[in-house]
Amino acid sequence: MTGWLPELAIAILATVLAITLHEAAHGYAALALGDDTAQREGRLSLNPLRHVDKVGTLILPGILLAVQLLTIGRVEAMFGWAKPVPVNIWKLRNPRYGMVLVAAAGPAMNVFLAWCAAMLGHPVEQLNGVLPPEALELMVRFIVLSIMANLLLALFNLMPIPPLDGGRILVGLLPRPLAEPLARLEPAGLLIVMLLIFVLPRLSDGLDPIGWIAGIVTGPGFRAILWLAGHGP
Image (cartoon, rainbow, N blue to C red):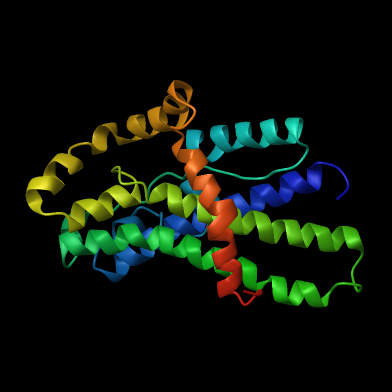
């Protein structure tokens, strides 16, 4: 690949698609289950600008991009989040289990998108020798970054801390005596997540949740998606 600009462009495209479709999946799932809040507030949209969060969509991914491009000259992983789609749990036909399905829709969409990206590898393989090597490499990099961005976003959001999707799924599945204390963590949830990401790894080299997730994404998760898409054993 020539230069860092194409690498930057495909990294941004892969990340924006992953984040935007993740949030859209929440909105469409809520609508299907009886809640039209996202639709009425204009958030049932595939327009990325409607889902931008200053920290999660702009600042943090921007820092990750800059650090990787300046240190290793390429993008190996991207991470971020969008402004949450509004959901009124009491409008859902079954508030408790409906919220479980709405929360699960986002990570499920990301796993599906990772599989779709892996499936793109089949037609790209047929273009070997037809397109210039630089163009072929760019396509392969987009596929790889799409798989990793989507798997990273799915697994991060499945962390069992509300308001992350994993926390909301757990609140809906746990017995009430356990679910209620967990649900009360939601106002402080993002602060807890930030402490886990940025402070915990500094306290101990072995305590790095994002490192654990990245290890799954680049190892067994990546291999599993390729296998499901028919790329060998």
